[in-house]
Image 1 (cartoon, rainbow, N blue to C red):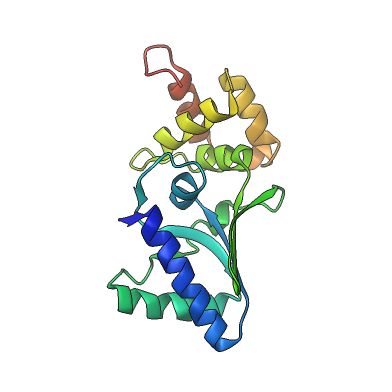
Image 2: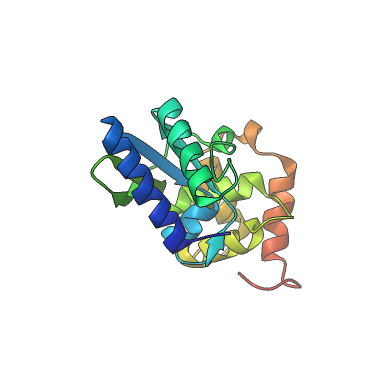
Length: 174
């Protein structure tokens, strides 16, 4: 598991690698890394889901860090990039000399987490946290928020069931 401290250490090491190469990089973190670094709602995450550029350079540097830190090769990955729309505001997380790290705004994180709606991950806890953080009081408001980022046809039925379950009075309240 990657703690907040370990993620920051890895980003600083990545910055140093970019500096030595004379490259400038940008990483947009999503998922658990945002929940750890931005909201401190979790102590650790399994990996860092992100989009990054220059893609080849960041991948190569991340692979080198994986070897030297004894991490899985996919500690930094872009597996969730299919969920991203380019319609959200970005907030800076870290600005280093050769690496900028940003995250989507909370509203977009909530929409994205609801869209992925994975039952076997931290998505439920993350959604509940973000609903409370944003002071959203109904499933209808969550649906409207999702539709402000994603076309209705891209929203799978599981998302509706997921949100309804989160707001079910028999379940733990958000």
